[in-house]
Length: 207
Picture (tube, rainbow, N blue to C red):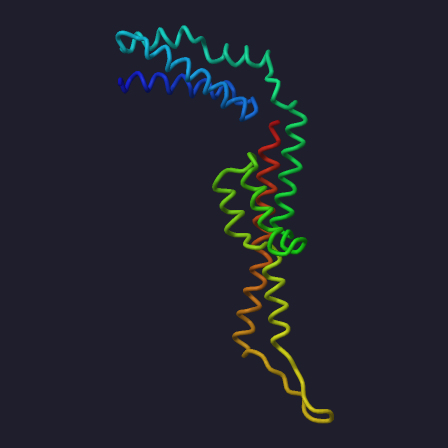
């Protein structure tokens, strides 16, 4: 198998993907896979797989820009109209952000996982951004609220009627550290969701 032939074919398919950038991702993958299959079939029938033969083969396939233009003039039946696809994606993205932040409060435990599923099935964010939303928003606001409730109940006061009031709880340093932790757990999910919301608006802006 010729390395140069592989390079030429990969370059051709990369150009095709660039020309199809405005297509829905599912339709774009279908077109690239279809052309790739045609190339593989034609390549298998070549007697001599040299650079000239591969270039002639790709020329017969047509210019990627022409393929994209032809495909644009014949929209796929299964592809939803751009406005509909955009609206559906927008609604799912908003739901993902809401459930990541407060899903654990709406549906304890399960709600946050719903947000994670919506985040990872969305095509808006990159893998790195999805990891950020998953790892830095563990439980969303449900976790700090739970810790705050547990901490409040742990610091109880009591005593006999008429006697001195006795309170139990951690020392000052421990309480201060716990307070900083709870504040951080409040701030981080809000900051991450705000970042994801901003990235979503940046991705959607060109459309």
